[in-house]
Amino acid sequence: QHMLNAALGFNSSDLDIQQSVEKSVTALIPVLPAFRDQCRQNQQVLKAMQVEEVEKKKEKDGEKEGGVTPSHTALMRAKVVGTLVSHPKSSFSTRVFDDIRAEVEEEIEKMRVELREAAAKIAEERREGAAQDGDGSKDAPYYLESMRMQAAATTRIAVPYLLSFSSELEIDMLELSAENLCSLLGVDELKHVKAEVEGVLSSVTTHRRRIEETEDPPACLRSTSALSSFLSGTVPAGVEDDRYTVEAASALATSEPCYASKWRCEFGEAWEYLASTLARWKELEGRISKALAKEESTAADYPLLSSLLDELLSCDVTNEVAATALADRLHFITNQSTSRFDESYSRDKEELGVRVKKALAKEEVNEEDFAYLKKLLDEVRTECSDDAKREWQRAISDRLDQIFKQSAAGRDTCGKCYSHAASLRCLPCSHVSICEECVAKQLSSQEVDVMKKMNFHIVKPDDTPIECPYCQQAAAYISLH
Image (tube, rainbow, N blue to C red; front, top):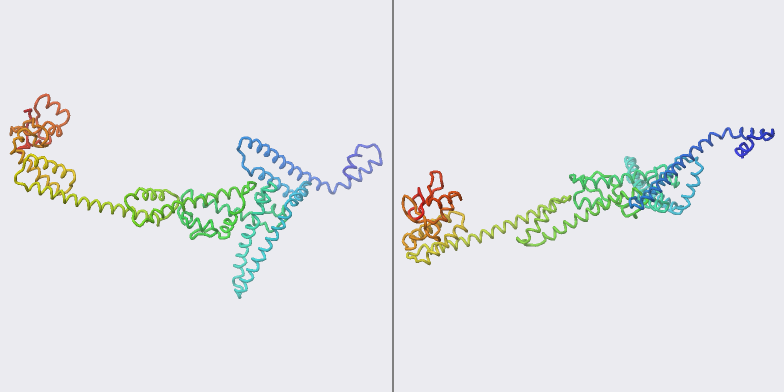
């Protein structure tokens, strides 16, 4: 009224009106600083609202391009609400707070009731614990423990409500500071929730990062048992996480997804990574268990077992028991296959030895025996690799040489391969006893061409010796017959 009276009569030429204006201005002087402060706070709120309008326009433009995160609007509105709470003298604040509380009034009251019941239960447990202690020596530990329990319990109860409020009001409640959250909803019990949810998110994202970077256990949850324990709300051995934080994380993972909450989106993404990683590890270990369940593995199982071992060793899970079992099974198959090969080789070698001895025992041989001995010689060269090979090869070769020298065919057949015609003469012994093919194997292609062109070859002192198959004398020259 005074402001209106002063504004309307300030330029009047009427004395009475000017006296009335003076009285109004005098009355306004004490409250002008408060009016000035309220004006300034209104400006801050209006600036925040203008930022929200700009961001909403950007969001709409981004939606057309498909590049907007779902929580953007709620995040910006949380910033506006935070500005309102920080400037309670603004003429907008009371009206906005009343509107917000009116929309979720019933849910706020339900949350209050649950929080009070949880606090009463924890307080009763603390009193019972102190009574059992008797001398009061554990009062402080009981108190500190009960405070942690109450903060964790408050978080488990309040966060689902806050996420519901975020979706309903399109305001990211968990982006508000602890003080602003309590002021906005009028619930003082929420003062520790902000710190608790930040601790939960830090724990989950840290374990995700450690697995992705394949850090060493036990700090890194790189076994199915450790990761399974963490996801079920139990702190695995060797992990230094706060047990109430881990319990809260497991409980909050069951909350409904909320795209109006930045915290819930980040927490859900990290938790889903851990859950899918555990499922992937269990699937691999299930295949390994199935492969190892066979009582007797054969060589046919070797590729699968080897592939599973490679997959396990390259995976981010650590399972030394499974790796050892696979390696042992592969070693068993290898030994089993080697043993069977050795047995088979021994039997084949024994059978070949009997045939060699039987063939060499004949006093008189014919052309069929000659061909059979050649076949045996090829078998010995191919299948044997020990002293027996050298002994049998020498005996068969001696018998073939003997037959070759005594037979009419020996004069026309190569005494080295017993296959091609003997076309080259060895000097100085003058025996026509070797073929071009056998000599060519010991010469370079250039030397072979020269020999064919010149009709002879000189064996140099540092060349590989060429022996006459008939008399085993080293040849100094080889000439065409």
